[in-house]
Image 1 (cartoon, one colour):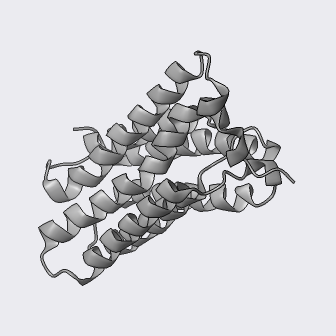
Image 2 (cartoon, helix red, strand yellow; image 1 turned 45 degrees about the horizontal axis):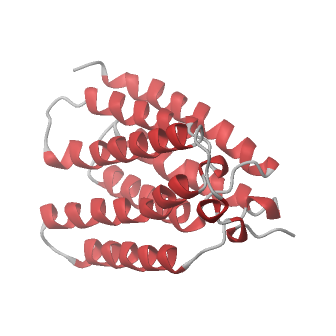
Image 3 (spheres, one colour; image 1 turned 90 degrees about the vertical axis):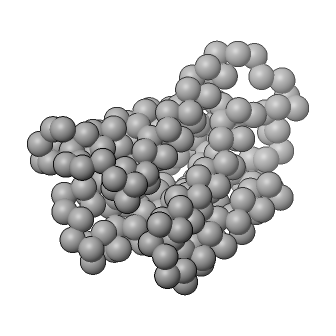
Length: 205
């Protein structure tokens, strides 16, 4: 276990990753999937509000960053028409399933089941970006995901007790961020065929 104040270092690392991703989005280099980032923003803000109500403490800073950064990314994606990734049927399907998981989380009375539902909704929301990172890795920027990985890792190390309630959500985000980052850096060096790139998925003004 490390000092709980290390969450501020984790938040700073998250901001470093976010800066690069938002900059690339504004330039039209990166094309965020709005289904993933929109739901990540919603889930992060909801999770932060709940943690504040439950007096989680400094660890809630990580959750705040998980909501704040995606919201800024979504706003940035509207500033450049070249930064829009066209939403397909798979994206819409994952979005509906994720929202359904959030609704179930909001109404269920059993804390453990509610937590599992919330985490599942977050992971399903990530699938459109996982798929896009595989098909068109050059439309993504890996640093934000690796910084998110470090953010969650540091946050987990600040926990005084490793419980399901405290470690499950950041742990799953840690694994997903690492997975997406690795997909991007490994695929970006490979020759991706035109079919895999799906250039028609990008809306160009």
